[in-house]
Image 1 (cartoon, rainbow, N blue to C red):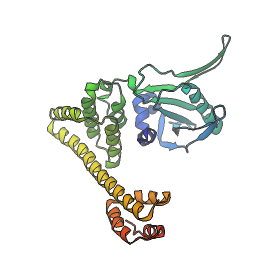
Image 2 (cartoon, rainbow, N blue to C red; image 1 turned 45 degrees about the vertical axis):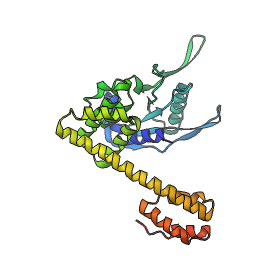
Image 3 (cartoon, helix red, strand yellow; image 1 turned 180 degrees about the vertical axis):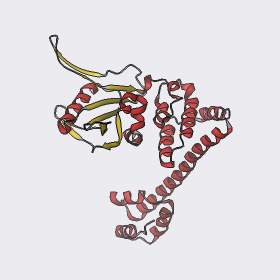
Image 4 (cartoon, rainbow, N blue to C red; image 1 turned 30 degrees about the horizontal axis):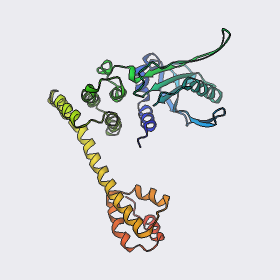
Length: 305
């Protein structure tokens, strides 16, 4: 099952300053970019609901030419939920209590439906008396037009266009434009892989869409087309490698279960981390196993890669 929260958190933490530059340029212009640090995850219990909540991402950063720090709290919301505005206020109050620093709250709505505009405030009022009027910034991707970000030389734009408002027929074109922008950024391989994985996750094309993608790809300049093809090729190679590992893992686990019975969870975790070559070696060694301790011994004495 895809962990959407993890994917978004990794993207935002890797490109946090670029995220601020893209959506809040006035704030980005006043930051001491060398002072950025991320705070540990804060988990607290909602007493009224009996649930634990984890704050998504909190950055501590200094204003330029000032001694004071402030916090930027970004909360990704993958589903439209009632009570979210109240939860944003509770997060704000909790962070204020813990750190006693000014807080700039941001909600990033990444769901596809519904397209209605989400609220950006939480208000408490009695008989016309306003007790509380709490506001936060909102970025709602399904209300942003991907065309408005085509000229943004920003890695966050190349990733998040894949989640913006688009007609179904535009999906192949949007994917191509995401990759064209990504190719023009000339990022290091690790960061390029992160964005390309994000785009491919949220714009996974069917066979018909893939044909349209290839037709669109053929219309761009050869040098640009070559860079995009390199990104697509890396997906295919990664998919083949992952497919080979999944096949080897499934086969090996069947052999082990048939030979030894139920495999302990700890051993299952260790086995899932093995390479294809190691899984193949384990599949051969299974023939010599008699008791579960044989498997434990084999894993504990596995040579480091």
